[in-house]
Image 1: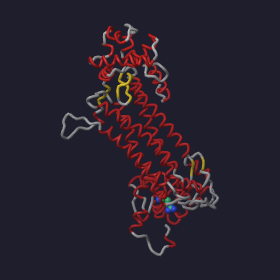
Image 2 (image 1 turned 30 degrees about the horizontal axis):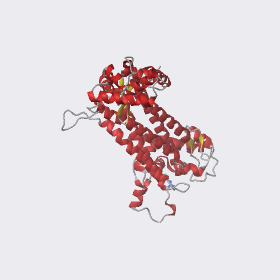
Image 3 (image 1 turned 90 degrees about the horizontal axis):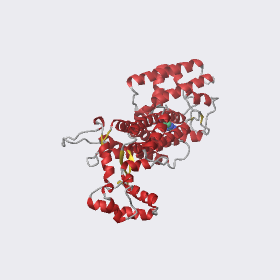
Image 4 (image 1 turned 120 degrees about the horizontal axis):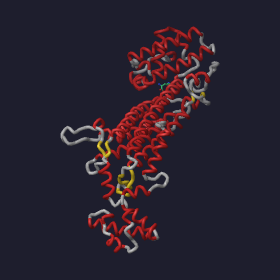
Amino acid sequence: MWGGRFAEGPSAIMREINASIPFDKALWRQDIAASKAHVAMLGAQGIVSAEDAAAIAAGLDQVAAEYEAHGVPENWDLEDIHMTTESRLAELIGPAAGRLHTARSRNDQVATDFRLWVRDAIDQADAGLEALQVALVTRAGEHADSIMPGFTHLQTAQPVTLGHHLLAYFEMAARDRSRLADARARLNQCPLGSAALAGTGFPIDRQATAHALGFAEPTRNSLDAVSDRDFALDYLMAAAQIALHLSRLAEEFIIWASQPFGFVTLPDALSTGSSIMPQKKNPDAAELVRGHAGRIVGSLTSLMITMKGLPLAYSKDMQDDKPPVFEAAGLLTLCLAAMEGMVAGATFRTQRMRAAAELGYATATDLADWLVRQAGIPFREAHHITGAAVKLAESRGVALDALPLADLQAIDARIDERVFAALSVDASVASRASYGGTAPEQVRLRVAEARGALGLE
Ligand code: ARG
């Protein structure tokens, strides 16, 4: 394809280090689509004859059919998907194939193909997040009243509802989807026609190719267009953030599924057994979601470092943009599906959750709040009195509301029998009805809003 000025062919090492076909063959659909848009425009502008344009378009369809049926052949001499396709096109239709590359370079070609690929990856991630949101909001609706311990420092803090806990992840997914939408909007400009770096002297119609490929508009600076990979980084940043969220959710399931917690039974379909310990049911899928977050964040780091310090415009370093994006996208799809399945299929052991909430003095804050409200005691003093009550209950190994009134009154005489109504976990969660709080009535409101936003009603 470029042998005109060379006396010798490339060495074996050169061919191997240069070849991107082993991975960029994944771009074949995008490459064919962009070439078809390009040649249709060349024909419409009279840059190639209508006859050649038609022959090229038909030839590209045939190449696509071959790829679909037999896969993309991997010949390192042809370097990449662009040359592989053009070479096969030449075999099929003869010299007219050589007109396809008029007013185009592989630099704007690969930038266009890759944007198209990443745009699909964004849409796929968004669909995965939406499915996860549906699972979360469905389970949250079932468990708006189910009480569990809420934690800070992984120490029992205050009772919350399981529905509230699950909806926290709904919010993370909502932010993730908005990051993807931002990335998609910024990505959606077409580099095609920027040519090698400076634009072209041919009378091309960039609006036409941009619109044919579903882009909002052409890019505005040819140097930027061929050397920009922000769209891939935007996607990877969003993917990394999603992976962090999924790994936190996975970690919760791992902890909850452990025997001392026993808050959840994971679906068999997303667990594995042990080859030596017959009793085991391991949360491998959740552990791998937690682990894959490392690889996805690594992909982002990899591309950031590839792009760092590259002068304008295209440099071959940029060929290394694809493996990290492909890897992250594959892992992300799996992780989203695994966590959706886990949320949808988990059996929540609500009795054990409730018992744990009752055990850890989770209503101590409610006692302090009661002292403030009913006895007019300043919060700091109420905190101290409550600490003494917890200490006493702990020394006896009983819950706060199992302490006899006389013992509570010995700690502070202003306590009366009405306090017991505030010490149950049910009263505790019901009282936290501030906007966005854990009270079942609040959770039900948020579930209804979320279902409406997802179009579930
Ligand atoms: N395979 C190349 C890549 O992915 C295509 C662009 C090659 N451009 C060039 N000037 N050699 O980056």
